[in-house]
Image (cartoon, rainbow, N blue to C red):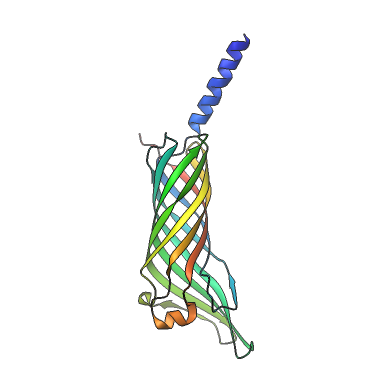
Length: 207
């Protein structure tokens, strides 16, 4: 009788692990906390944005696979510049919107945890800025040509699988200077994208 109980427990545990295997294809979305690491800024705060799109994982039943994604990702930074010996402060909110292609090596542990590491490429869709402070307030669309069209970087994170649902967090470290003209460089210098993503993925059955 005891052997039957143990066997039943093992089968139940095995079924639970199998059901915890991550999805192979689906949609995902979440929030970005981003910054630009601007050297010239007197103060810099993270900017809240969104991310969302689709993903595909090779060999979802195996411990190792590649997770390939196509995402919209809103990045940027909220910075404060001071001038005239600190008498003038101006807050500038940079908003940079990208289409990104992350490719992550995914290592599955125990059928539940995915450890991910890889790289991404991003294409700049548009850029805008809003300002407020001693010099006035306003917002405007920025010339996209003032910024690097392509952004490249490294990334890594962890995700947890529960059936078709995956919840995770990822850090993206840009390697490309955002500014691409002298005018943009005056404000941003050699700033690069830094971003923490929190996301929820929902797998779509293949049959």
